[in-house]
Image (cartoon, rainbow, N blue to C red):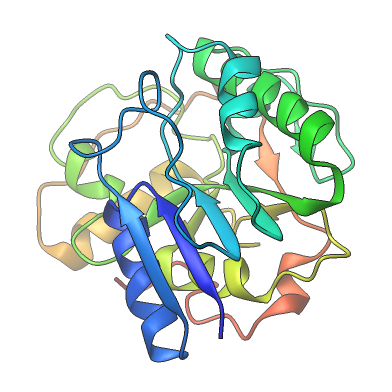
Length: 235
C-alpha cells in the first residue's frame, strides 16, 4: 500500500483517487482553491508518490516549478505533461523524438520536463497523454454543428481516461518517459463525424485540409496494459 499525493484533484485526479482506493492505496490531494502553485509551498504530508497534474502555469518559470516540486521526499514523482510538446509539423513521433513545440503551453511543458529531470533524475516519470475522453467529455460535443472546421485530414491523438489511469499505475521505473496515446489514429473528419452520429447531435463540417502532420505513437503503452478503449469507441 502506498500513499499518493495528487496535486490537481480535477477530472483526472479524482478518478485516479477512486481507482487508488479500489486497489488498496491511500491518497490525498489539492484543488486550485486550496493550493496555488505560484504562491504556496508544496504540502509535505506523507507521500510515497507525488502526482503532478496541473495545467501549464506560464506565469511561473519552469525552474521555479521544478524547484518547488523537488522538495518532495516521494520515491516516485509523476509529471503529467502533454503531446503538445511536439509541433504540428513534426509528423510521426514517439518517446525517442525530440520535442519541437509550436505553442507557448508546449514550450512551458517541455522546459518543465527538462527542469524536473535535472533535479529528480530517476525518481521522475514523465507521461505525455493525448487528448482525453471519458464520461461526458468528448471533443465531438464541442465540434458539433460547427462549419468550415480546418484540419479534417489531421489524425487524432487521443486516450480514454480509464486507459490513462491504468498506464499511470502500470508504468515501471525502468521507463522514464511514456506517451499515453491510443494507437488508433483516424482522421478528425471521420472520427468526430461518427461520434456525432452516435451521440445524435448535429454533424460538424470539416474542410478537407491538413493543418497538422503530428501522429503520436508509443514504444511501450500498447504492451503495458489490457486496453479498455483502444479504438476510442466508448465513453
